[in-house]
Length: 170
Image (cartoon, rainbow, N blue to C red; front, top):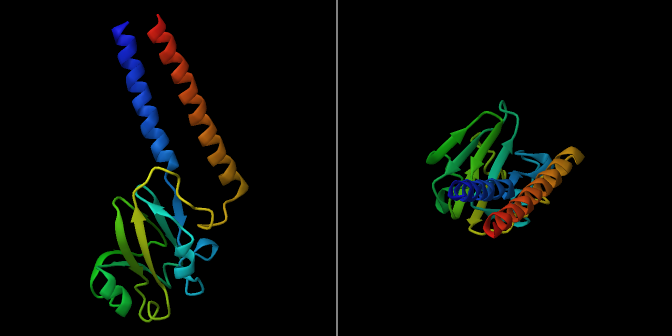
């Protein structure tokens, strides 16, 4: 009986951890335009809520662009891409937002930052799902997958709750 209760407790903890990861949002920078000079990154970012655990996805043509993370506000404002924290050039780069605070990104191609290809975001702590409605236009299969995932985890949580109640009643 004690072993059953311990295994049930471990199962509940694992499900809570999985549910937390399922709630993290993936923000495609620039929405459907991606990481490109034609996107209005300031406007795009203003419609987003970036939370710890979310990810940024930079999608671009690696022959034309790259992504550099800048040290701070001064580098961001002056487009000083010589002092970077990180540099990426794969064309489908993912950045994990692992702590609260402000982060700065720019295109590493000469002149592109000055043309507006830069992004400033503020990551906050919080437990509610992030606003990713404007991140990109999800395909119907992506939306269906998210709905299935949420419903599945809700179902598992309900089953676990019933199972726990039965264990404690016995």
